[in-house]
Amino acid sequence: MKYGIFGGTFDPFHNEHLKIIENAIINLKLDKLIIVPSYNPPHKKIATDFKKRVDIINLYIDNNPKVIVDEIENELKLSESYTYLILEKLINKYGNNGCFIMGGDSLVDFKDWMHPDAIAKRTPIIVYSRDNMQNMLNAKRFAEKNFNATIQLLSLPLCNLSSTFIRLLFEIGSTKAAKYISRKAYDYIVNNNIYGEHKMLEVLKMEVNNKTFMHSLNTAECALELAWRNPNINLNDVLIAALLHDCAKKDIILKPRYSGVSEAVVHQYTSADKAAVLFGVSKPLILDAIRYHTTGKPHMTMLGKIVYIADKIEPSRTYEGVEGLRAYAEHDIDNAFLKILEQSFEHATKKAERVDILTEITLLWYNAT
Ligand SMILES: [Fe+2]
Ligand SMILES: [Fe+2]
Image (cartoon, rainbow, N blue to C red; front, top):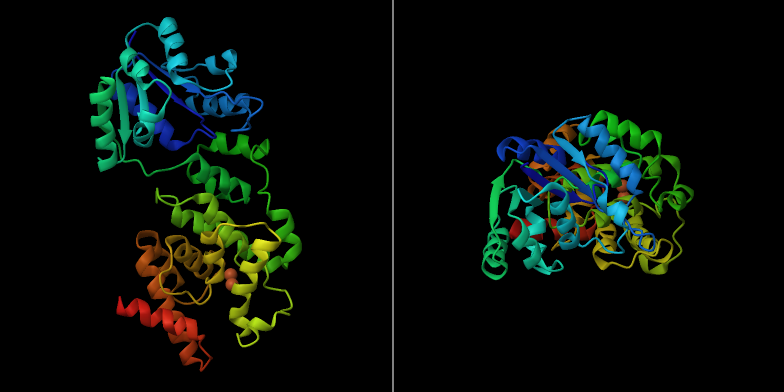
């Protein structure tokens, strides 16, 4: 029997996982595709309950006779999921004509797995990737040379969809997750409240008024949607920065050091202070994105730009031209940031409003670079 092994946490299984297994069955002419969800050891909470993750996969595969969900990792209850040990047992069970399927990111990390040589010795490796990223090609050469691995690269139009992204959408109560998983999986997750509410929402709800709370959820959803295709961005950071960007909006400002700053701008500084003190945020990258979400600043990080843009184009914003900015931001974060910066400057100038000096400096800096 020719079979492929596809392992992972699958928390949750999503449309790109399905795309990979469907392609593997056809392209590799497999008799069976074995999905092997990782076990979560009781002392280390790494993922949602094993059975629930398996239920979601079963809803996806819908009795496809070519697909097996093997619960071997749950049966073995190993404290760590060591692929070389599991693989040995799967080969004993299904025979020698198997292959091991992984994504491009896993190949880059493959050298750090436990006994990669033992894995490479037992089975050929199939790698699905979005494109031939240089670091993946280097990893392929490294594994072939050092572990005697047989690696075949297969390219699929994948978008870097991650389970983390989907989980975070559920945690902020966004219905957008329905775009990235099947209807049945979506309903199962919602009906069983698998992912619960993000831990910061309870406090945030008490700290801001309802309008700002809804705006913060919308900004978080929008920021996640702008960020998820970018493999270099930490989506947890995006979520926290976007959720907390206005967390001090209704607070009375007592700090004299902000006395010269206008009311429209001062909350960016106080929100960053509050995110640190009340919400325990310590990452400078996140605090920086909050601190300059109204004015912008020279040398904005990608996270800073995403929060800045999401704040101005989230779904409840209705000003003229916002639709165009939304479409633009989907493809080009850097230029969308500059466009919005220019527009808010022009808007303030037209209305003879005072423009914050930092906005002026930011605009001059970006136009000069
Ligand atoms: Fe704000
Ligand atoms: Fe805002």
